[in-house]
Amino acid sequence: MKRHLEEAIGLPEVPNGPKPILRLAHENRLLPGNIEDWIEYANLRVATAHDYSGEKAPKALARMTVFVKIVVALRGQNRSRYLGVRCRSGRRDSAG
Image (cartoon, rainbow, N blue to C red):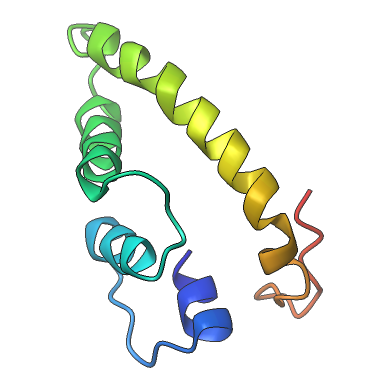
């Protein structure tokens, strides 16, 4: 997402953190819905990354079903946007 914001959108300075990147992507109409949902998805990812107790899993799994549907639809909509953007290796990204 950061690379797309820099190379395809042309933003000169994109921060490294996921939340600022999500906000910029949303402002540039790359993400559907409201930004609060995307921030919640990021927060759930951080909260569950090293939680081995399973206490946080039910909430994350409940939200994940919605997130996966949105991302699959988004990938289909944006596929042509990403075609032609060069990967770090210099090869063209096949987007799938």
